[in-house]
Length: 448
Ligand SMILES: Nc1ncnc2c1ncn2[C@@H]1O[C@H](COP(=O)(O)OP(=O)(O)OP(=O)(O)O)[C@@H](O)[C@H]1O
Ligand SMILES: [Mg+2]
Image 1 (cartoon, rainbow, N blue to C red):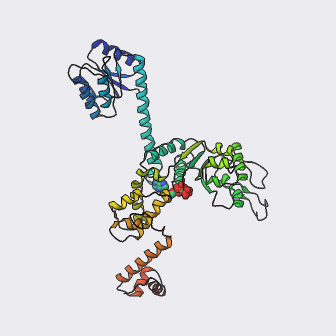
Image 2 (cartoon, helix red, strand yellow):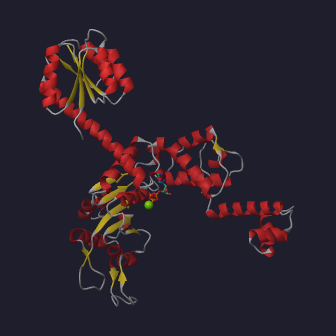
Image 3 (tube, helix red, strand yellow):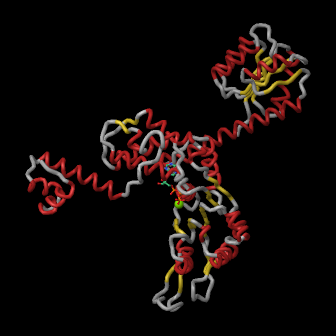
């Protein structure tokens, strides 16, 4: 970052010149003002990062100057200079937003250190802005909704780690967003053009997992009729996402460890090691530390994958995220299910905020999808989400069936009305046979 521009506001000529010379020598761009009025003029014209402000000026008092500067640009930092012993001034100045204070005579080394700190702070702020932009631009981060400080930290960790090649371990309860985070890391990484291979270690039966990951040569075992390329190989030059790694059996854990160390794999029944250049992102909702203690997870592997740890807090510990997520999901599902835009009542919002979400974001998402699909009125109400407002038992997670049924019923009714209950026409417009239409009308009890 460029060096700070500094405005020295000091009525004592010698003091001002001295400071100005020292700071110019240090490479800073320096402006000088001998009184408050002059300082205001310069401040309005130039871009000033830091003001060294003598608190006792002949024309304007220090506090109102601080308010003036901060009012115009809150990012300008102010270090005030007070006479020795006037601590009260210093305290008031800090309250008004000054960054720090120095007492006369000024200790130059101390001043330079403070300026360095300010520069660091400013470049951090800028870096953060850049991160935000990067997130927004490179990964359509409007799909990754958050507001809480905890998730802001997660987001900035994602951006910082994405472009390194390090192995990441994403942990968090079920439904907190581990997969979304893995997607983001991949999407922001230098390997984003490369393959992105996902393996869910708990969804694949144990006996199959090994051959899925490593592949095999023809004849490696009965049934291996032809060579199969495994997921590790497929992920070459890209990223592999090992989901639910806590469920990986121990013998595969040692094989994985070898992949990580040697960066090569062997197909089952294969004779030659094959180089693989992959980045590993792993996720689990298990407590791996505990699993290590219990002997279910290899400690050495744990250390290998726990290089960067991204812990996603449960939704109940970041309630500030609930409303933004609610609005996001309502919008998403009204569009997806072609529903009319609906408002949501205050009581419903309160109830959604109060609820605990053992199933985290996924549960919230399901509750909302169900409500959007099934609600009838203009408003989404507590009853659309919960059985009743006091117990906050969520409506049964409606299976997709219930949803489809309801949509189908509605469409049939609509079409019949539109076609004056002429079944041939209604059936044609619905793209179903008349027989089917009659069957469904019967089933749903639709009558004129
Ligand atoms: N911050 C978020 N913004 C928007 N949608 C989110 C967010 N977090 C999670 N979701 C949504 O919630 C659902 C669950 O997220 P995801 O599958 O990433 O969670 P998970 O931690 O991998 O869950 P599991 O442990 O059950 O595999 C997904 O539909 C995802 O799109
Ligand atoms: Mg998942």
